[in-house]
Image 1 (cartoon, rainbow, N blue to C red):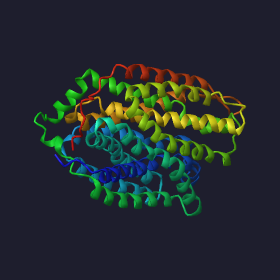
Image 2 (image 1 turned 30 degrees about the vertical axis):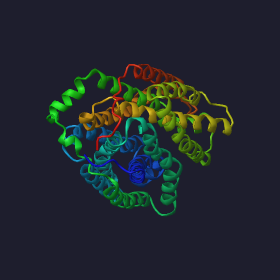
Image 3 (image 1 turned 180 degrees about the vertical axis):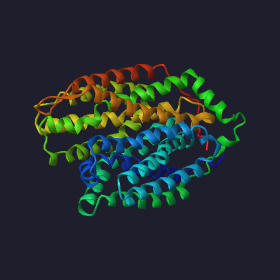
Amino acid sequence: MTPHLTPRRERWLLLTLAGIQFTHILDFMIMMPMGPQFTALFGISNAQFGLLVSAYTLSAGFSGLMASTYIDRFSRKRLMLTMYTLFGLATLSCGLAPDYVWLMVARVAAGLFGGVLSALSQTVVADVIPFERRGRAMSVVMTSFSVSTVAGVPLGLFLATHLSWHAPFFGIALLVGLLALAAWQSLPRLDAHLHHPERVSVWRGIGQVLAHPNHLKAFGVSGLMMFAGFTVIPYITIYLQSNAGMQSHEVPWIYLCGGTVTLLSARYFGRLTDRVGKVKVFQRLALAVTLPLMATTVSQGLPLWGLLAISTGLFAMMSGRMIPGMAMISSAVEPRLRGTFMTLNSAVQSASMGLAALVGGLIIGRDELGQLTGYWMAGLLGVLASLMSAWLAGHLRLHESQARAMV
């Protein structure tokens, strides 16, 4: 067991993990707004571009399932550095891709290695940070989504517009190299789980995770939490432009306003989580998010400021509930099984996002004017999923006795 981290080293650790999450999320997000460039450059259809985007999530989910067989067999630090380096090389390959097939293969590889990083980062936080401060620590790591939205995506689009579509991937790969060095310096050994007296075999560990009713409830909360948002989120830009009349040059304001507010609100939700309680804050935010979620699907006819107010509220509430949600879910498992649990949880989340987007796409149609129809039904399905997640969270049992971290 390594010595207790000093406040300074703990702060650098959290910032490094946030940076790793930032590159992983940005690598996924940067593909979507670059759709017109790829369809024109490679001469592909919208369906083929959709497959290019989903390849990352699908391979990440598969990677999470596979990682559950080995993640608790290695030092967290060694595994993090290995996977992150391979992720950087895969991202570099995306930038070097000469055609659609090469890019598809590189995206699959990036998903395979990147899919493990999210689970590893959350596992490290749960291992290192004491329970009573875990919500605040998780909020630092989760701000990576906000930063990638408000800064990463616009900067990536700027590079793609003024240099080439290769530039964003080269930039991400360079940042990965720098952050890998920072992780090598800031991460402690993180191998106490290897010496646990009750350590079990890989398959027995997976069996123990899946056999525990509390773990299945946590997976249910996690899956419903992701499903609730992704019935609506993938189609927001299309709806706002085709139905609500938003112009293409106004779309970046969605990311700037939503990302900025989320960046400011994340620390508040983190402190609130530690002060009020993980389950209570999650339940409140899971209820609160239903308002902007449903409003987004029926916002046709509103002025620009109204559309931005709704989308910003959705961004803030959607990412805000992830803070108590992940702090709660990571505390629902024993430390010796946490790595296996979190990788399985990552796979559940990836599958839920893909399923939600697929179901939403089946529900939503288009009329003769090209406007979306049935979007409100996709929103209602997301609302029901969020309400179910709040109810199921109330039945979770957390290991609140873990006052000190296992490192």
